[in-house]
Amino acid sequence: MRRRVWLAFSAATLAALVACASSDEEGSSLEPVVDGGSTVIDDAGPGEPDATPGKGDASAPLWGPCNDHGWCETELPDPNLTFIDVRPFADRAFAVAESDTLGTKVLEWTEATQAWVYVDDNSQNAYDSGAYAGKMFALSENELYYTTAPGIVYHGKRVDPSSPFTWESTRLPYSGPTFEDRDPGRAWRLDSPVSQMMPRTYKAALGVTGTSAGDVYAWYGNRIFRRHVGGDGGTEWVSDFASADEEAGANESFYIFNATPGEGDEIWFIGSRGVMHAEKGFQACPTLYRKTSSGWSTVLDATYANDMCTSKPGAIPPTLVFTIPGFGTLNLPFTQAGWPTSIASVGSGEIVFYLLRSDSIFFYVNTTSGVARYNYASEVEPPVQFHTPRVHSVERVGDQLWASGHGFVFGSEIKPSAWLVGLGIGSPEFYEQQESDLGAELETTSVAMKGRFLDEPLYQVRGTSKNNLWAVGNRYALHKKTP
Image (cartoon, rainbow, N blue to C red; front, side, top):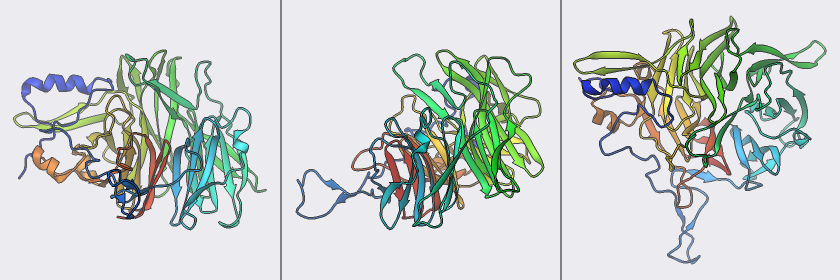
């Protein structure tokens, strides 16, 4: 039987590992060392050239709209759109995007026309609105919600796909903290404070999600709201929860970054609490909240101080676990800071979330077992390495997880038993090389287009099945319809 050796090293290096586990430096990583280096996920051919005879110079191939992994680049109505979210259906998809020139825009793609068209009424870009977009939610092909700054929810309905949407908007009754120097609905940080030439990383604390027409939630800043329908048919957004702490210091900030429905009636919200640094921005620790018919519960919560996260009493402490031959199994606290900005349900009371940082760390949380376990997605590398936020989204599609990041998309099986002991995601060859038990099997794909790697962030991947996946981001909306 194979030994379980997730990290193999001598006893002399144990102290160094513990120090790494307690550091919040963005460049640090607990990724297992693989002889010969990591396998680049985009190692397959970037695309298939257009084989039409008699066109162009034979030395300069004409690339088609799809690569050899089945990802097709769709034409955008404006080349400078940044797609923030996408909600797919069988024969169409909705997306919310933002642009410096157009503001916030809502689009619809149909298979019949093979084109994106705007379906908003542009009222979202009135004075002092539409500066950035948040997450969206689609109940059906004829009803959707989207969000835009400053904390405004738009609800659209239409009779059928051939009819236009009718929109109504509501500004969320936000009563949380406001700041002179920053937006309560958007956090920022500088991933490399030593280099002022690096751009800031921004993340909107704004979105909408739900489980049904009667169970819709929106969030802005540190507040979560639920949509209520009165007896007269009127609607209002009522504050349902606040990410806060009566013992918090005056300089602490709280944000909700994302949400996902879970099993049954549960719904999850993930965010961060921490402090604002004048030069480095928001330095924070993960928070996680769960709503069920029994009410709200705090799953993860920690305070930030001295570049470390300390779990609050009653919250599950993040840990990493591994076995060292001759030493036994170690269970260490994971105290690094980070923003958890992507989340997916993998069972009742179980989720995974990724930290928005320059590596592929994710955590498996099981409320029944009371664990929040460190894991790593191995062999996943972006085309640009220098302080690039790596994983931007994770989504459950059937019996798989799919994740998107800076220039890549990858899939994996859902394997909680492996994540419980920190075995992560990787190829069978990777685990064989590590002489380790198997983690969740990695499914590689390539989003390299037209003979070059995609050096752009893909902010969201979603799909209705493995044969209908979308990955969208800065200037790209990619569609995959083949296994």
